[in-house]
Image (cartoon, rainbow, N blue to C red; front, side, top):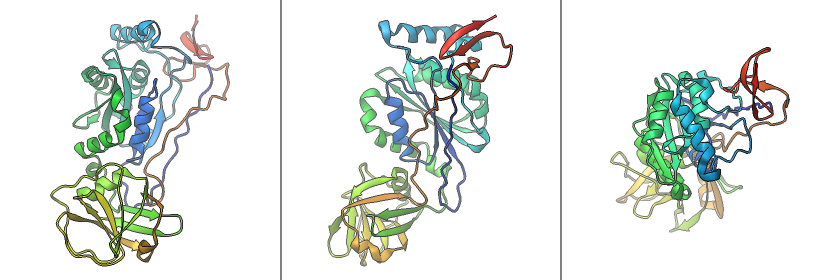
Length: 355
């Protein structure tokens, strides 16, 4: 068994108040869940942890998914027995750092993928009292069995009001599905960043905007970071088109737009940065105002980066370090085995029986 060390990268966001921190946990066999995790962490601020099986190179889908079926059936037969669960690489998490946990997992034969079940069997109790959410990837099967596994393994979590099901054919559109889901579960409302600031820059000209607390502003904020093309329009504004539509509700504000205003022109779906004043217009919703660099708006050109002040709004992924002691033995839950420990252990990525 190779010794594995996870480095949880802490992302510091330059915001006045951060009420809650989020941890995204994912297991990915085909790569779909990793892609979903990347899409999610492009929209929220989170630390990310990948769950990996201790036994490497296993083909769960070989011979008509014979091994995967065997693992799921073993868990179903004895769900309260630790030895029923396949071993995973060890992890180290400071659970007190997080209030929000989002789990991303594939569906295996109507159940949660076995490696993620192992993780939650061992650590689900740590999520008691925390806000927990579930995103499931599957080819076509419904996710009720995965939801049941989740609630069995994390019995005392505060569940968001719905899970997100992303079919394999929808992974390419995951960003918009996630954005809609985050709004449906009121993720931003429940985890308000009370001083939302964003930076717009073309590498030479930089503007910092402070957003208001409308649904449209929160929707844009959830999409960041973005790399888009800025365009000239009229004689007083620069515009860009987000890759997915900015959503808005009845709380949005119409009004006159002085120079430095950031707004959404809802009929076209473009975001507007004014360097000259504009009058109130139906469907033109104010998102915020420039607090630094308003004079630079008129000079923006080409490709621009739109991001949360202080960094990106997410961490892409965290990989394991496979350079450790190959002779180390681990228990099935990924914890380093104690001296003289008996039973089924993992060494060099394989199960061994120590009597």
